[in-house]
Amino acid sequence: MGPDRRIAEYISANRGKLTREAITQQLLDAGYQQEAIDATWTALDTPDPDDKAGEGFWGRFWIYLIGLNVAALLLVSFATQMIPNATGIAAILGVILAIGAAIALGIVAVTRPTRLGRGTAIAIGGIVPLIFTFLIAGSCYALMSSFGPLPPPALSGTLTVKVDPPLDLEATGPAGCQRPPEGETYYNVYTQGPMNSSEGPVNVYVDVFPQTAGGDPVPNISISVGDPAQGSVVDYQSQAGGVESIALEPGSTATSGSLSFEGLLPAESFDEQGNPIGRPDADPISGTISWSCES
Amino acid sequence: MVPVVEIGPLTFSTHDIFTLLGLAAGFAIYYRALRRDRILGPQIVVISLAALAGGAIGARLLTSWEVIDEVQAANLPFTYVVTHGPRSIIGGLVGGYAAIVLAKRALGYTLSTGDYYAAAIPLALLIGRFGCFLSELPLGTPTDLPWGMTVSPGAAAAFPRCPGCGGPMHPSMLYEIGFLAIAFGIIATRGPILPIRGDTLKAFLLAYGLFRFGVEFVRGNEVQAWGLTGPQIVLIPLIGLLVVHFVRRLRSGAYRLPVPEPATAPGG
Image (cartoon, rainbow over all chains, first blue to last red; front, side, top):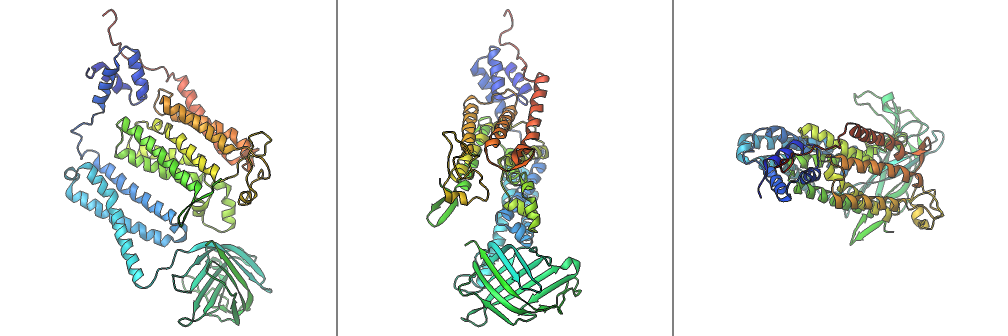
């Protein structure tokens, strides 16, 4: 039993609104044979062989090109926590994907979608930028590896700084702990954003590295107190300003540890336009820094 | 209870594994239905990707207001809410639905595809909820009913807030699993239960919304305002929109279906 004109008309008139099951049931109720209904559905579902690439192609192609690349950018950026921790790298990824998208567009435009076939052309729009990005990222990775072992990803945790009177502040906040590559002993710990304190925003950076090859790791610390936007910051830096003493607690590692410092002096600091905003005349400070990150 | 699964040196969160399994099963059913009706094409793939992305973002965003104060107090950027905030199934459904609508508009795609999700969504949620249950997430409010469940003191200590962890609690995840299993069974065996395209999904969402609203009373989630939890407050406008949709359908006579020309002419 073949397709039926009356069934086809009913299906065509209602398939956009009613479910396939409801249409079939209505036709059965009207006395049509199941075989005729199935044959008509099959005939209507068969793709039109004249439906070639061309009409409406570029609209779909642009949506693929932009949609897939934006989705890839967001997925990778959020999954790897580039956003919000490394937005610069996420921006570079976006630029690389855009270059790949331009290459894909060029390939399809020059070859013409009718010659490539619609599916192939759209696949090029989705895949070429990703392959291009993998090539660029792989090259960067290989290049960086050639300089030495790459460090493992930074861990997240918390950092606490306590400063003795007269400054007398205490602040705790999210921290990043950058572990050393295998076979190395240097590491650093840093706040992932300004921490709140009674004296305003506080940023802390601890850098631990051996002064000589094979020597014991020595800490350097930087504590910034105040809001740069308000033009008043005190940057205490053991390297630039100087320090009376820093003692790293034995057994401290990138994932957990603490240190105490005495007589940490402020250094000069400047805003983005180069205007001095620091207060190098502030009194030296003493206190402790401790950190803990998930291992 | 199995909060993590260890495979060799790798440790996976049971919750995440079941979430992925649920998504995979849901998409498998969805694509099978699309292939059966021969409408699986490039546009549907884009719409599906949009649904996935919208669901992922919506799951984080819809409940972001619950933690926004903490994020601001810690001076963290708002994107921290998206990357580290609480996740919500209701948010995932709303985000996915909104993304589908927007993607269809952008593509000029007019066919309603909601019913193809109607069996997929309860199955995906059902599997995901097993992950929640196995992860020993807080179960519910205290109860002395015979099926009340307890969690170990060690597991209870892992949760920042679990007011009922000291004794037997309503196994709210199991209530939800039961509801989803029944919904999936009905839709999977009967097909679309309403004749208009997309309405079976909306009917499921309405039923799930009402059920979830009720379950929240024994869930143990924190009361936010007017004696209601965050999910309940979010659900009120969503349920309202769905009720309005069905009232309009009924009042317009949309369920009185057009009758085809008879197979045999009268008297013929």
